[in-house]
Length: 400
Image (cartoon, rainbow, N blue to C red):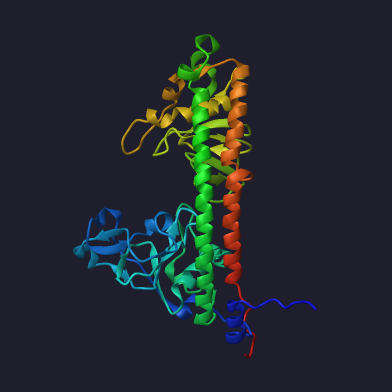
């Protein structure tokens, strides 16, 4: 006789409290949504009224917080909007669709001042349950339809009232939160271990990269390499021309940190080295390949057949071109500067050997499809899958 599977506590609660399904409601039915205040980062002080700035939600807060990282003065605080315990503080503007509507549940006892570009969501649900839901694929699909803008993506607070959410009984919400809290903690521990191992491998990679490319110290002597300028080995060093900042288009536009926009036509369809020309990332080196265009804040480097393309790329990354940037508020690296940089150029066979070794290390450390990065990504996807599954319910039957 087949042994019956034992019901979990969550399954028992759902069977007992909502056997016919779960009611889905508009957020506006279970919450009041208001805009944040008007303070800026320049208003921060060492002590005073606790506050959350919308920019911190992307980078410095997790899903929940009971202490703030920053404060504003009593005078500045008089003009602000506040969140109270259990409120959700949501950033409603961002540079991309993924980050817009990132949020944090405020679990502290104090009222906190909240900056502009936010929504303060005061609700009747379990705050952790609601915050977990705001990070699911179900919510993502809804916010994507409400988001507007190109350079700045926005979901206005009044539009959030139309978001549909599942509202099971509070006991069910609490049990889901307990499961997700435990799973989140376990996933974080495993990810931390994997990340530590990956960091160690990257340090090992950087050590061998430096060893292979530091010809002045570890090389085989002057007879095995010569020093030449970038201009000597380059077909051209020139700025890109694309000034578009579109979010949609057929072809990617490469900028200071990789793909930054899209366009409707492409200029380039070959492998090139790109160097950030202006801004905080000036000197950042990366590779473009395929059909694409290049922004006007980026330099294009084409190299001659007398050198191995990948060797020059690895060499420039190792040299940290940011140290050549000039200017305070808007650092700049010029084509003229890049052309005059002297680099060691060993024989082709040696270049090939160096590239072969570094390619293997680079793949092991950075390619998401192999090794530790793949395992870290798998843990993240597994967590997201179970979170979304726990927060999906059968819709309540009509007439019950």
